Length: 108
Image (cartoon, rainbow, N blue to C red):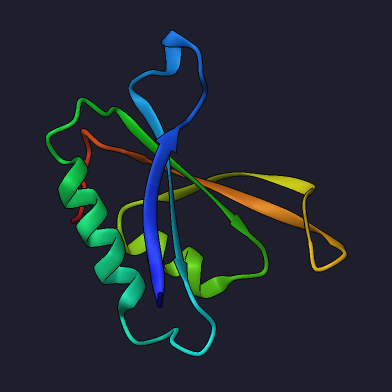
């Protein structure tokens, strides 16, 4: 598997049922080939008929390539959680981005 894109519930309460979280992952060694763009494009095309108001994404930083990918899909940075993610025996900051679906259709 070279990568995947997925969506999930943003928060489990009814007040948030029109918001989702999206994620895209591309395996090391195959980044920079446009796979993330194709995967996200396919995900957002599949979600286009859903009643979604906002899409959120969390990106472990530093990761300028992922942030640039999200910006291409209409996301904008809305905040940062400090040392919230732990991987490789280290704490990492996570930048949160959002996309208002009504402003730009999913996948554009």
